[in-house]
Length: 159
Ligand SMILES: CC(C)(COP(=O)(O)OP(=O)(O)OC[C@H]1O[C@@H](n2cnc3c(N)ncnc32)[C@H](O)[C@@H]1OP(=O)(O)O)[C@@H](O)C(=O)NCCC(=O)NCCS
Image (cartoon, rainbow, N blue to C red; front, side, top):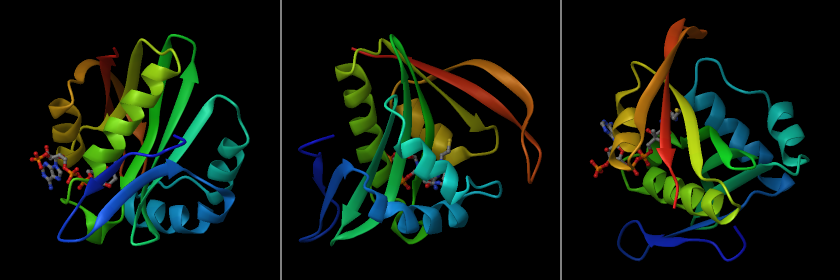
């Protein structure tokens, strides 16, 4: 995500999507812990950053990181492995902005399809994904911990 997607998220406020840097890891970790009962470790993010098949993007508002996405690329298939927006910044279109950037980038990298897993009870995320054309193709029983819950597997064709 070299140039970066931009969008207005309020009067005079612009959001920018760009490739994550090692210096973003602390901010990503804070948002991750505020967003999930079973958060990834900081190490998972830093390790991911070193893999050529992983794309981590952040969305910045006013020079501060307020969200991130993690995508795994595998030829014609891709997976959205993580996506979160800082709690105080939700509902302003930033999740949709990041997701649109993910879909565009995965397509540009040659993926024909993208998958993701989402907690069954996660109404906000499920609504976001439905609005972007994802549909349910499976269920992983007891996939999540803290609390234990099934994951729904969603899929969207790209291009
Ligand atoms: C899911 C998440 C990334 C959405 O980010 P966001 O910036 O709040 O979302 P946006 O403002 O871009 O909203 C986009 C769409 O998401 C849906 N949405 C967002 N918040 C919602 C809510 N509280 N209830 C229902 N739908 C919601 C709507 O469909 C919305 O479209 P609309 O505004 O046209 O109605 C955010 O809620 C989040 O970080 N949640 C915690 C982490 C998480 O669950 N990540 C997904 C893991 S699979």
